[in-house]
Structures are given as structure tokens and as C-alpha cells.
Amino acid sequence: MKKIGCISLGCPKNRLDSEIMLGLLHNAGYRIVPEEEAEILIVNTCGFIQEAKEEAIQTTLEAAHYKGSGTCQFLIMAGCFSQRYVSELIDELPEVDLFIGLDDVPQIVEICQRLEQGNPQKPARISAMLAGIRPSHYLYDQHTPRFHLGAGHSVYVKIAEGCRYQCAFCAIPMIRGRLRSRPMDSIVAEVTSLAAQGVKEINLIAQDTTSYGIDFAGKPMIMPLLERLIVIDDLPWIRLMYAYPTNLDLSLMRLMAASDRICTYLDLPLQHIDNDILSQMRRAITETQTRALVEQLRIEIPGLTLRTSFITGFPGETEAAFEKLMRFVQEVEFDRMGVFTYSPEDGTLAYNFPNQIPREVAEERRQQLMEIQAEISRKKHQTLVGTVQTVLIDGESEETPLLLEGRMEGQAPEIDGVVYINEGNTTRGTFEQVLITEAFPYDLVGKIVAETENL
Image (tube, rainbow, N blue to C red):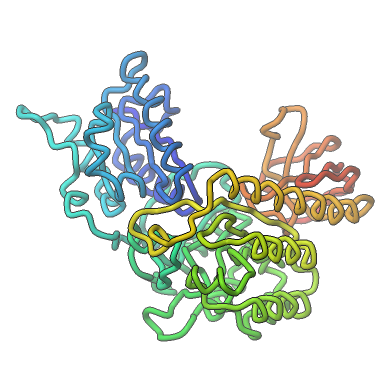
């Protein structure tokens, strides 16, 4: 069997698709190797915004160099970018041997085998599944093998695919389809198996985790799901990502507060605060409702780490609307925040909206918000200096092997900062008590002061 490599771009949901493809290939006897050693190389792309598209093309062109200078014989493009733009890409990227879509994920073994076998005639460069070009409908289950990328003690579990909303700026429903929730028993079985394998942190993901179950139950079922997950043995941290603001009710908040298994952390993309912009975005919430929700979350969940994200430069965003957003960020003081510039996506409602904002203006506004948030984060982190925090150790630092790094309960993997540890020895996947000694806007520094039992 040939050696397989995969370059995974984009969000954790896309990375999970990469893990499934590699898991299927590994089970079929393929060797999983670094990209430079691969004979078949898969680039799993993101196509959500313009920057992601540019990264997908650049990464694919860089990967194509391995066909001339390395061992690579076949280059496959997968993922959202391939799903969405295959008709244009087939001419623009002759370096790619095969374009596959999201519904090709479970067929990746057969796809690679057909590539190896070759075709006496000119082979098709688009998979039969992708040739139909329609939103994805695939959804994995607990029996689907995965080859975990990254730390094995922290794992993403996708509870649903697609989205039931039609936000004016977002192409996800066109790419990944409408909301499709996994059966609850399937999720519980997968998480139970992962906990038995020693996984310490489960990060629940979907396009909107709080809509989980609406498609099969007619109402959100995220709370019943969490109630079943928190009783699984040997599972210290369950983290809820990608929550939609209108689906957070009081009972869910109180469950999060009451359970020591559910991280006191919430990722709550708000996108904006100006009512006119929210209406144009087709977000089902107002400024008043947003402020009330944030206040209620902080009352009901003591110690909550609240993360959000905003979009600058949405069509029609006036200076007054942006100034309102800046004031909101200054007043509310989120613990974590990401900001994206608006990206005009063909096929979305906002693509043809009037009053498009120049890209340089949107970027300047993004930088202004991030500067405000950096100071907020620095002040919040400074209050932790001198305190002892429970930290999940991720291993050697990516910055230098002389440091360890880990994360507190309020730090999600990849998107938030880390705790750098410059004193003490331990192993990956353990929880340690760490004295915080230094604070920076996005990261902390500390030393291990005592070992803690596996929670």
C-alpha cells in the first residue's frame, strides 16, 4: 500500500473530516506519513472566506512541488473549497489529479485505490459524487475510524453537520447543507469510547451546537445530550463550541454551572451589535437581547470564560455602527474575541447588497477592535498572576522544546492562548497545578507547583 499524507486547512470541523479520511485509509493498510514523504497527498481545504480560498490555492500549489521534487505521485484536493468551486478549479489547477467533495469522505479508500490502478484512458479529474455539485449530506457515526491529528488527549466530536440558519454573509448552508444531527446514542457511544482510551477533553463542535436535535426532535436537544455525557466515567472536560445566541436557555446555563465536567467556557459568535447590521445579516437577535443574554450568562455561570467573534466591514456598516460595536466591546469586556473582515461570498444574500465597504476600511476596523481586546485580555490575565490554576498539559511548546505548554479550562485548543510552563516536569495529557507568574494579552506563563490527580 502507498504512503498517504494530508494537509488539513480551516476549522476543527474540517480537521475532523481529515481525521476520518486518514482513519479509513490507515485501517485499509495505507501508511500515514508527513506530507513530504507521501505518495498520495490530500489537501483538505476551507472555502469559507476569501483568505481561506487564497490559502487553499497557495497550499495546493506548494504541495504540487512534491510531485516534481519528492515522492508524490497523486495530488487530491478535498474539502469545502473543492466542493464549492470545482468547475473553476479544474482548469485553474491542472496540478491536481483529482477533486473530491465532502460526500466523498467515506469513499476515500476506493478513490485512492482507483488512482493507483490508473486508467488507460484520460482519467476523470472530478469524483462522480462531486460532479453532481450539491450541498453535502454525509454524517459520520461512532463506528467511523479516525486517525487523530494533534494531541490525543483533546479531541473534537462533531454532533451535527450543516446549518438551519441563512445568515446573509455565510455560504456554509450551500456547502455543507441543512442541519443534520447525529443520533444521540451514536455521540454517547463515541465519547464513551474516547474516554476509555484516555481522552481528557471533548470539544463538541457543529456549525451551531445549540441547534443540535431540532431536526429530529423539533426542539434543541443539546441539554439532554450533555446530561448523558457528564456521567461518562473518566472524562474531566467537555467543552461546548459554536453556540448560537438565541438557543441558550436558562436550564442549559444552570446545567453548565452545576456540572464540574462541563467547562465554564462558551464560544458565542455574535457578529455585530448594531440593530440595522444584525437585521441585514439576518441574525435573529437584537442589541437589547444580546446585552441581556451576556448579563444573564455571567450571572448564571460564575467564572464563565466568554468568547465571541465579530465581522467588520459588512455592507452598510457606517462609522456610527462601528463605533457602537467598539463601545460594546469596551463595555462588555469579553474574555476572548476574534474579528473577521467581511468577505463577499457569491451565492449569499449579502453579495449583492449596496454600500459595500472598502476592504482597507474593514481591515482597519478589525485592527481597532483587536487592539481594544488585547488590552482587555491583558488586564484580565494580569489578575491571574499569583494564583494557582488547573492546567491540562498539551506537551512541549511549539515555540521551543525548553518549555511545556498547556491550557486552563478557559482556553480552547488552537483558537485561544496557552499557559507556557518554564518550571517543572510532567507528561502530556495530565492535569497540573500551575502558579501563574507572568501575563500577556493572549498567553500566560507559570510553573508547576504540585501534581494533581487525574480529574
